[in-house]
Length: 402
Image 1 (cartoon, rainbow, N blue to C red):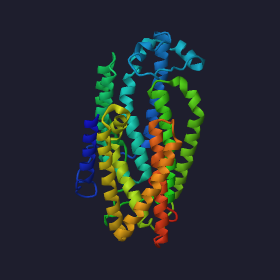
Image 2: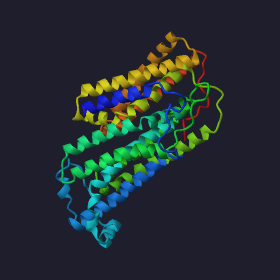
Image 3: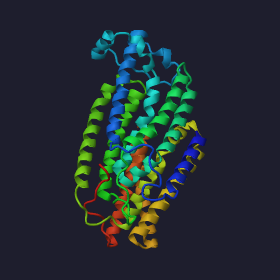
Image 4: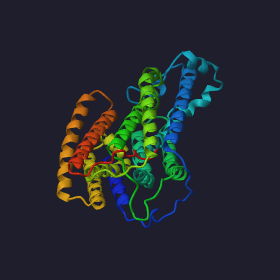
């Protein structure tokens, strides 16, 4: 896992920072680009995942008499808490030829996991800014390769009667997903002829982005716990919090859409720009090694390798973001760096509090809360310093692409 993490990080850094000829990167796509939304594709993938869970339940109830031990014994504890009885039980009793549903166990999910991960990440990048979305799409191939290698390594470590089938399907998904992503998803407007990229979100827009991302994260964790681990029986207990997360997500995206239609008289100040630009670069670079980093932090690899990859990504993102802010705003280097140091301390304090308060949550959920607290409080500190220095932030900023 460490090798995958380091290789993915290196690929992200090289491909992201390499010179690109012209606004489109010097190369044409293999297929014409269609206008599509990663959020819509994510919804379709989630629907397919849950349809497959229903079919898995039918198969286990009818063919294995409700006993999933034929496959659960190959997997860690906490899998295959099936839904039973009610409408699903009646559907299972009615379903004809249930033995034909055998591929629904592990095989279908092996193909769908990568599009689920990819669409989730592309959705978040699109919400942040068109620049981040374009950057993530440019890295679709290394993202797919890194995630596929990680999935295959985990698959091999949990060998079962379907492992070979799963590996073939994961490789097929790894080839299909980046092609479809580049074909179906529009990359957004390119920078203008002056070389200036699209307007970045200010503090208010960043708040909407964070709320959207946290809400989406809650939905994703529900899918992970109830569907990707085959625990459809846990879904009723997760429905209230998931419905609340969906409602918050819908409201946040409505606010973002309304804000994107209004013109803003000025951009954020230099400190705010430096933080937000750095985070945008981090968001793109982190996409490639995100999955192996997650497993490395869960003892599937060396923590030293994960830390090295994380430091390389953070350092590169900060360097790029600060350089971009200095170039665009003409701010004084010393004052800007001092302000960023203050904002880092404020963000670290908020992130530490979020870490302590989220004890007992999923590791991914905990990381999300820490990152959200760090980003919001650090940016708020920069916005306050910008205002004191006489470079007021954007009073009515957009919140990225809708």
